[in-house]
Length: 325
Ligand code: GDP
Ligand code: MG
Image (tube, rainbow, N blue to C red):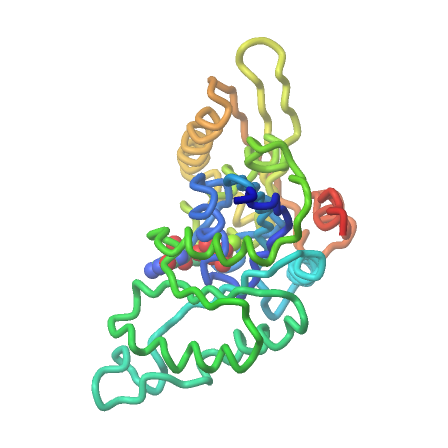
């Protein structure tokens, strides 16, 4: 028997905000590298995670969710997601199952259990895939009491795009991941690995440090604060045994600055302590972490500020090494 051929390629995770793309990426990698939260639009940049299993290398690209953009930052997030998808070898479209509006209560006996209206936005994305090879993940099936409700959903999505496979799963529980990987392998081109086999991500450490700080801000503050937060590493000195890391937290309003600092600096302390623990775990050593809060009014709508804070037009889409296609 001849050995299985080497396959490698990019797989874009696409879908509306909050359907569980980042959770799925972490489940597939077995490592929590993408930050997740119940706040929509947590992921801003394309985060790449590399998984090498036997003769297959998957380069997953988590994307910001496609949404109706209300700021220039939102525009850029949408553009990033579409660019990543168009350059991928395969797409995983993620949609979440939910109880039908028509069948309030989760589709109990006698009530209509499925309405395409609930899935209009997802179906539109499915149609937009055109000729891209894609697998559909119907996520969060742990929320569905009656699994027979899946049948009409499968049928409707199957009519919207010729998916190579449809995988109902729960990204949070991680079940279904092996089956999804098997389906995806079939869509990848036969070519050498794009990264060393032990690579987990091609993002630099400083990227993760900033994301871990942002993750804690999302965890500890409410709705409007997180949407206007940008975290930038201003200093990352490796001199000596204990790296000194300084980060600036840009917020959109003076009022948000007050919230983030908190009474007697309490909030800042909570965020800093939790983020430091996460960074120390990643780096495997102690670090000094200092956080500064700066009010940069309405930076999300200022093209110059967006560039300054790292949301450059091309900064997130052109870094992947090209496969030999
Ligand atoms: P993204 O915006 O698509 O990246 O979504 P996230 O991965 O950040 O997840 C959004 C929210 O959905 C988070 O609160 C997750 O914990 C939750 N979530 C993700 N996957 C599942 C799942 O399989 N089941 C349930 N019940 N919740 C999930
Ligand atoms: Mg995300």
